[in-house]
Length: 315
Image 1 (cartoon, one colour):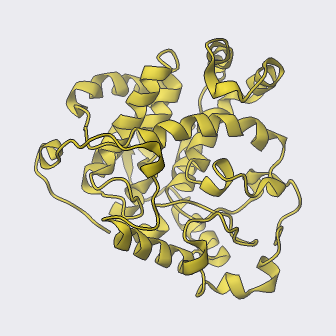
Image 2 (cartoon, helix red, strand yellow):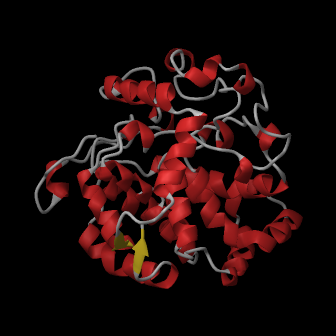
Image 3 (cartoon, helix red, strand yellow):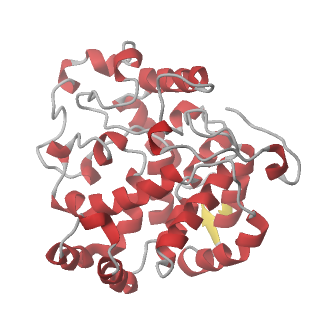
């Protein structure tokens, strides 16, 4: 784990740079951070097995590690730089506010969506609690079935994963049934699944009263034509799932960006996919060393925390 100490104002340690072009993001072939990124994914792809995922899920879903408020958890990420990310080399706390502010600019009336942007990576706090980063950060993928080629560095990092040599896990479906639904699929263990479980345990789900936001977003041209009106009406039945899907699957790039694992998806997953895609563009393309003024933004985002996930939470 990389923990840094940059004093009371971490922003002073970083200089702004020219904005990156979209095609320059997620470069896993070269770059200044490549060796760090490759090492992290090599360890992840060697050790993330079905047995490991079951063990870590059992360990961390007792919610007896500590109690703390959401803002404290976010700000604790001042100490963490994500070693799987080829695009940033600054504390993860800044990325939280960058993502939220990007969503706020484009979806000013969807405060629950902004909150999701703020908290989506809070599960990385596991790395501050002595978990190795390969068990916390990075892209996620299903275990218990064939590792698809769209997984980052697939051809170079899975050679020593014992599940890759297990015939029971090397078919398209592996241990799963066709169209079983992602809720029934075990994903590689990390910050996505952990925060999803924390949110559910602490009853922090997005409430049903935001159903109208789906229609509002549609009428204002949201989702880039990915949904028609009938699909929007259908999505309203389960709008409280939108934020939780974003949290749980935002790192599942083989699914939301490459179209893999559709054979495991059910209708609900297909309905949620446009929301995850909409979230992804803010998660990815707001990354810049032009860092936000966290102190100025904190009161607004604290009000959202107080609205949707208030008080002291069990972690």
